[in-house]
Length: 233
Image 1 (spheres, rainbow, N blue to C red):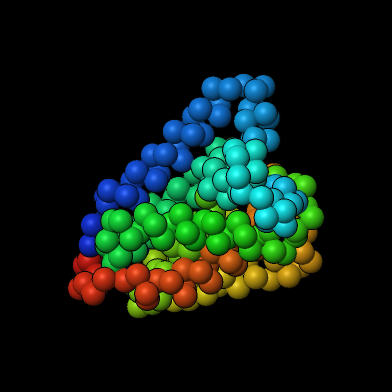
Image 2 (cartoon, helix red, strand yellow; image 1 turned 90 degrees about the vertical axis):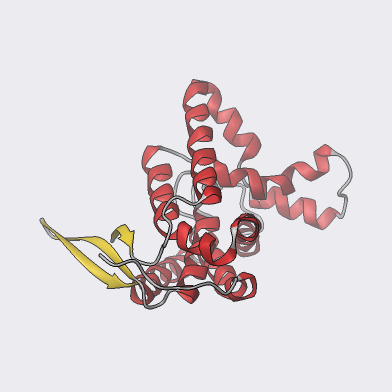
């Protein structure tokens, strides 16, 4: 299912959501400019669960060397493994993020986004603490946005491309169903993965699960009471 638009966002172009999209795209363009050196860039800034586990276990948080593995819970959010990886993530952020930013306000949304990304990273570390496979991408933070949207706008509708064999259908799906199915797929895939971390550029299923659950839990706490009327078509 590929989302095209929703009918909940009163403003589509919200400042923090656009800034996050721009930052992700800018980092990806920088990755492309590195050529063969991109491997070293990814190695430095990607999340490696085993490295984070060692840093947390040591209890030593002094100095850049000790903090570097922990900082990857943030830096890894802005690294992507290819064009489709970044395009898919930014599509979801563009469609669902504006409405969530509206309900939280700009500053709360920015804090929430980073907190969701960190929570998603820690969920990956918790599931696969000894994995040395790098994990990258904004999808954990975006999963948090989806979780908050699930709570804020269950009655919204999402215009979706639904491929059926060789045919393409455009249908409107209630957000509560769309996001429940999305989460169920992530959870099922994560359970099938049996605790192994996703390969670099692949799918970090447990980051999605952890981020979504974080969004469901924290969304209502951070929400500002605002009108939730939906745009007319």
